[in-house]
Amino acid sequence: MITFPLPDDSLCTMESLVEHLRRFIQCVAEGDGGRPVVLCGESFGGALSMSFALSHPRWVKGLVVVNSFPVIRERFQLYVAPPILKWVPWGAMRIVRRFTESRLHSPHALPEDLAEFHERLRLVGRNGYIRRLEILQGYDIQERLPELETPTLFLAGSLDQLVPSVDEARFMASRMPRAKVVVLEGYGHICMINHDFSLLEHIGPWLRGLQKSEASTRP
Image 1 (tube, helix red, strand yellow):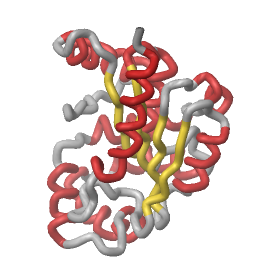
Image 2 (cartoon, helix red, strand yellow; image 1 turned 180 degrees about the vertical axis):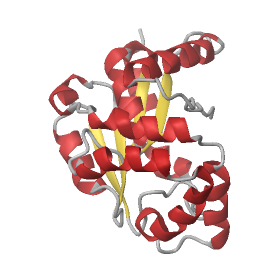
Image 3 (cartoon, one colour; image 1 turned 135 degrees about the vertical axis):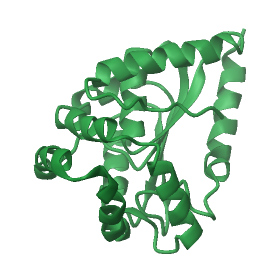
């Protein structure tokens, strides 16, 4: 598994992120014989992964989309948050996030899970964070979902309080030709850092099915 770091860039667009990801994936795939990859993205990362698959389907053999969405339906905060965040001292965001943790994390998250989350957030800069919110103001792939023919597994936390992940996953899967939904019972929006969460455990059966399908179509 290789992680793609989102750039801390105040001028990036969804299109430029897709192109940046294309170059990254092309390097990885060419080092592995040119084979397409399985992309896994959580929240904004899921939106980027689906946007990439729409633009470059030949590079993607499968998508795993965790707690994501085809559009942000509650748009008020998207327009209000960026100008506010530009004035808030960035060092204070750590304190702000502690007051919003109940909406982000699973109820059974341990202190060490939260500590890991905060440690990872230290790598996220102000410019990149604000720009992602601005990008989501114009993000909407609802009408293009039928074009997503890449085999896709949606993982959706049943206790997600930030995004109605289960409803959104089912909405997207119903409009895509090769999509499946798995509900993560008891998990909130940010679940992949949880001590008891195993991504491979949840996607293993789906991956094996994907490999069998690939094998059956080879000449």
